[in-house]
Amino acid sequence: MKLLRKVKPMEVKRCFVISDYIAHQKYFKKGVKTTNELEYFKQLVKVKMVIMKLPEMMLDMIIKGMDVKRFKAYKKMQWYMGIVKTNEVGVWKKAGGLRLAWTRGSLEETGRLVARALQEKSGQLSRRSRMAIPGILKNSLSIIQKEKYLLPIILTGSTRARKGLKKMNGDIDDGCMRSIALAVSGKKTIKAYIGKK
Image (cartoon, rainbow, N blue to C red):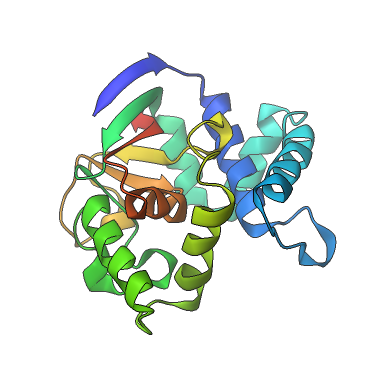
């Protein structure tokens, strides 16, 4: 894990809200579906135009309304832009509906298992993972590490995201599907926001 520079909490909050809204398309009436990379980028621009105007207090209200524990955790952290290896961080327990056994270890291990299941067209993948990960690989793989508001958010130390699982250097608090897609694509390191107490 390498810390590159300190960042303001506001940037991490924007990242969470923007990426969450993009992932679930909450600002698009009738659930507009992304069909290609250009469409994905257009949707990202629209969402950023809305979220970038919000004051920090409003971002706090959105995050707190979704998850009080996440809101409290984010407030305690010092935030950095950094680089992590896929073998030193883990995803949420059962992230994206994946089998528990597939999320016990590192992001690298999860990515390897998912890649095999996708290749074999296995019925063991949940509907969400079966739809989201190939969608990311097709529509946004080239964007998600370049756009700072789509980076994964990682908390160091043991967190509720992996309670009872193998302890890693950090846990991906937000962006598990994007991170798994990166691991499936063969990435060994990823850029992320890293929170340290």
